[in-house]
Every structure is written in C-alpha cells, then in structure tokens.
Image (cartoon, rainbow, N blue to C red):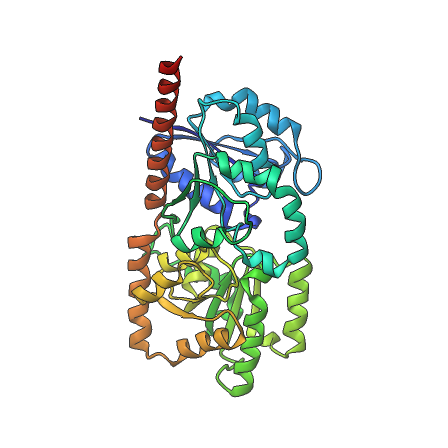
Length: 404
C-alpha cells in the first residue's frame, strides 16, 4: 500500500540544518517505495531554495512575527488535509505545529505525528532561561495539546526521549523511539576530494579536521577555537600543517563574534572558512578531512555525524551528542566532554593514534553508518508507525460506530 504523506515544517531553507535535511533524506526513500510526498511550509512562495526540492511544496508564508502565524497555512490545511494519509510535523516551536493541530483536532480521518528534532532538550532551558520562561506562557495552550493529541511523537534515540521529559512538567504524549538516518555519500568510492581541493588549494597539503554545520552556540564552535588555542600553546597543534575547516553559513552575528574570538586568541592561521557547501563540494570537504569534529552541547542525532561516517570519516564528538554511546561502542570515533578540556582531548587523542588505528577507525565508520544510520532504516521505521496509527484510527472509528 502506498502512502500520501505531508511534511509540515517552518522552513525548507537548507541553512536551517538538520530538520529539513532529514525530511529530504527520508522523503527520497519514501518516494523510492512509491509513497507520494509533499511539503507545506511557512516560507515565502518565491524563496529561491524551494526550487531545489524535488517534490511538491506548498509555501504559505511568510507568516506574522518570527513564530510564523499564517491564516493561509491553517485554511489550506483544513481544505486539503483529507488528501493525505498522514501529516508529519517537523519541529515544534513554529506555527507549523500549532497550525496542524488546529486543522486536524476535530477530525479522525488523518493521523499526525511529530518529529521534535531535539527541540525539547533541557539544555535550552538551562542555556536560555529567559526564553524558556517565555515558552512556558505558550506551552500549556500552544504546544502541550499538539504533543498530547499526536498519534506519535518521534524521538531518534532513547536518550532524546528521556531528556524531553525534563523541559516542562506539563507533559503527556505517545513517545515513540524510531531509528533515524541519512542517505550518506552518494558514491562512497568516488573521489570528491580533488574537486573540492581544486576550489580550496590553501588546505590541499594540510592535516584537516572538519566542522560542518550551523555556526551556533549549541554546537560548541567556541570550545573548538579555545581548544585549538590551548593545543597550539602546548605545541600539540602546529598552525603550519594543521587546519580546522569550518563549513557552514558564517555571515551573521554569532559567526562574526566567533571570528573575532579566533583573531583575539591568535589562531587565524589554523581556521579555514568555506561558507556553506552543498553537493559534491560538501562531500569533498568530508573526504579531505582526517576526522569530523562536533563539540556540541546538545544534539539529538546529528545528521552531519552520520554523513561523516558514511564517507569513512571518524567522528570526534561529545557525550552531549545523543548517539555518542553507539559511536564509542563501535569504535567509529572518539567521545569526550563538551568543554575546552574535552574538545582539546579529542583532538590530542586523534593525533596521538597510530596510522594503523586511524585506518581501522575509518573502516569502522562506514560499517557503523550502514548498520545504524541509513535513511532506509529511518524511512521504514516511520512507515511502520504511520501504518500502525492508521490502523488504530480505523479501529477507533469502528468501535464508535458499533456503540452508536
């Protein structure tokens, strides 16, 4: 049986990181199984990044305020929801979540699920207490009922599920842990490296460690800068031969602050900034790196971690990356604390490994990806839960009909 699926997300902008990338990857697998996928967003209809999405997109924004309140979005869902077998909400702090609930709460024919994408992690409560207080004003009427009434709230690992319970005491939902993943590198044995280095010859002959993703405080890039400065002072890091390659949008406020930190600590030579990369250039940046590093304070999954593994690149991550126990168990990377000492320790331990050990870790990285983190696995888990929700709704309708 083929499914008609609608993904509701605040924005399809790839600069937003993991949520839209996850939607794209899982949707590609769903399409391969002849499921029909569409996307509804709060983006402006003329947003240029929408043209790269290979399935129908209903862009019904921009909405009012940063929250994205959009009556067009709500009315469109009410009019069109019956065309789909299920609606999947991606992300919880935008009108895409409340809008789906408002449109579907009175009907039993269309189940909806929620992917929280790590947005209920208590790290945000501790890091941004004022924002958390504001969220409490919204939570009881604007998000709690969305989660409570969902057929399933998806978490990508047990740890993410457990942590979500700690953010708000008013909490009740049907928690479902499903596997998550990505398509990974398109051709694992192809050389993407040469094209990338032709565009970035300055790092063609250096030992590179890759940071790829949003330059955001939760991902700990400041720890990376301070760790390199510490290692450089102790003689472990050689700025002549070693580079941190920073791949991701870096033309906004926090990124400028980070670059100032780099300059103030005297490690400009050790950091190479590419800006955002996609396609073959992105995969070339992975292949040109000895290791991938993510000193994150909070990461429910980490699409870029799985992508690195797919390209045979070992990962250097913190315990705050929720899949870190699996990485450590498999020996596909190194794990330490999300602080300066831990980040410096990851880099120092990596360079302290023998070439034989590094080569073994590269082989294991690919094995771990294939065993745990493919988009195929994630798509099948999601499909199974959608079918279960559809069957449950049909059973409830039959029970109601018999009672009448």
